Structure formats: structure tokens, C-alpha cells
Image 1: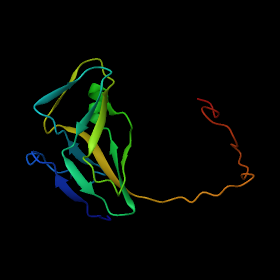
Image 2: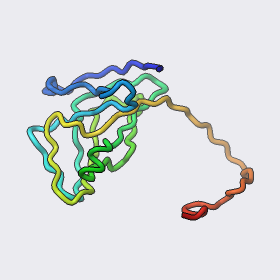
Image 3: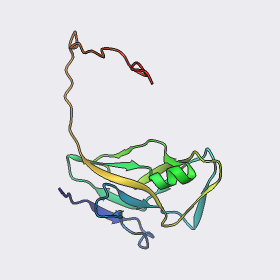
Image 4: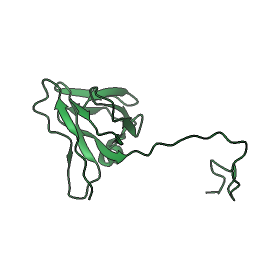
Length: 149
């Protein structure tokens, strides 16, 4: 398995929070913990920015994607608004997760709770080319349900 080194600096006051970490040997995402004071309640339909309590430096040619945790999604309706959230290699700000409660009950987020996962990916940059025509395919312009249910 290929590895890449990510440099992480904790936010002052977040020394108690674990670094992003893989929770099993074959996990593709590292769990990210909530940097909140005590507890924050996310009401149904509410959106909040939750600090992850760290800054990081990704090597050029990589990105980090923030994704919802499946257990929180199925059990409580908790997701990420801009899923996946993208952290570019040149971003050095505080990592934050924009969470939303799609559930029917208020959801408490406590300090240190695992609220998202982060997947590191290689980036391929595309070069655009303006053309007068595109190649034809069987699908052509069909989209949004064109192939049936």
C-alpha cells in the first residue's frame, strides 16, 4: 500500500484530541474528531461548522476529502453539506467540517467525537481544450434517468 506523509499542527488547546487516524488495518479514511467546548447540539435541519482542531500540510499532487461517517448517517442522519469536502495541498487553515442533521432528533456532538473521515487522494490535473465538436457516443446527451429505473 502506498503511503504519503502529512504534516499536522494542532490548534492551541487541542492537545487532548487524537490526530486523524485509521480505525482498522484496511480503512481508506482516517477518522476526524470534533474540537468543540463540551457539547454542541445540532438540531434537525441545522448546519454548523465544527472545527477538527488541526492544520495540515499535504504534499503537492494530493488532496484530502472529508466525508460523512456511515454509522452517523444511518443511525442519526448526520452528514456533511459539501460532501466530499476538498482540502487542497496549498491550504493551511484550520480544518473544519460543515455538518448537517438530516435526522428527526437533536444530535449532540461532544469534544473528541469522531464526526467525519478524511481520505487522501492523488490529484490529476486536467488541461482544457476548446473544440467545435465532441465525439459521438451511444449515450450522447442522455442524462438524469435516461436509462430508466
